[in-house]
Length: 303
Image (tube, rainbow, N blue to C red; front, side):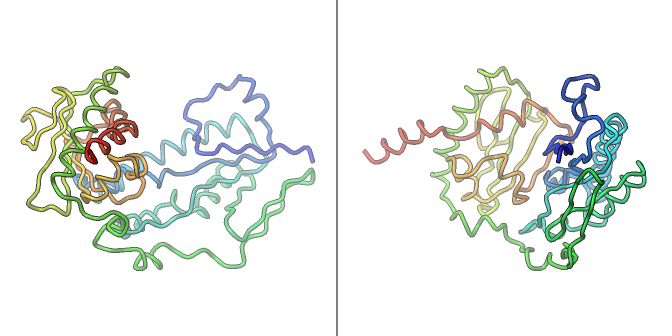
């Protein structure tokens, strides 16, 4: 009925142009729906080199930054109603209990988030979820909450928690010879792609197969463009990933992807020092065997 509803999808408004054509269409909208947390990120929860208290402090600082940026945006847009949203999900596997601890923080609770934004702006703010309905019309907004409250993470965590990663149910253990060859092929693609995209870093990436306690620790040196079984350069900054051999093989051969693997909360990370290196994490996207190279390799094996 001619009402304007703005849905920001996954885009928190950290950097917006207040006088852009898009903003001119958004200002004064009847509903602004916006993301309110980054709980889907495995940082810092899956980084075992970060103490639990420090991890929560990092997560809180990140979300306060998001809160400040979103408030600045809402001050400019002046919507008639607000709808904070974020994906509702539970984590399975070893990190389930650690993830459930986030529920106690205000930015991880949709009802608390809606209340905080509503109070800050004196504007109707709705915690919409499965079973509820929100109607926007010329007469204003009408909200019907769900009949049943959603389950709490702490109440269902035992169902999803397991000492062993859930990926073991999907990907079988691999022998060292299989890993050696696929890592060799993947590293060739990695180094060539990093050079092509002008990605440079002096970090090393350590890969520790969790289910091979007496097995190798692969050291991928981005500076020297080498892959060895260690030790790493003593002066190197290091990112370490601990995962099962089967899951590692699946990622490197294209059955999964590093981005999806990170978001799965099935990987354990260590980062020394605790610094983000953009080139390092971007380069990881190329640490796999391209389909054409894998087909050629398989053909050689069959011959």
